[in-house]
Image (tube, rainbow, N blue to C red; front, side):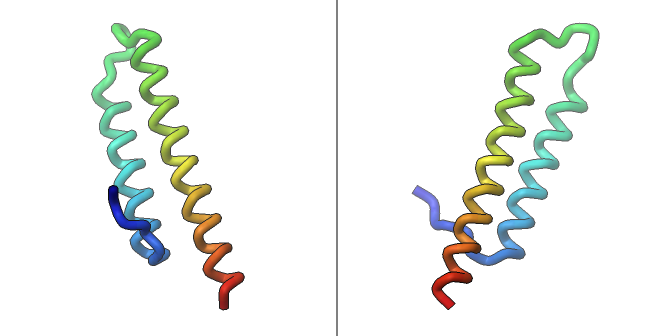
Length: 67
């Protein structure tokens, strides 16, 4: 299991990296041959990024409350 990312800069960098991967996958998909599985994979990638953003926000809110 990985360590939690609590540093805001590291969180932003993580999200940027995940979005860059998304863009690369999106660029690699041929619109003429894309199927529902390809679209589902893209949606799942966006959902994963959104979930991670919520985790980071909750973690940062929790950290603020402790101060």
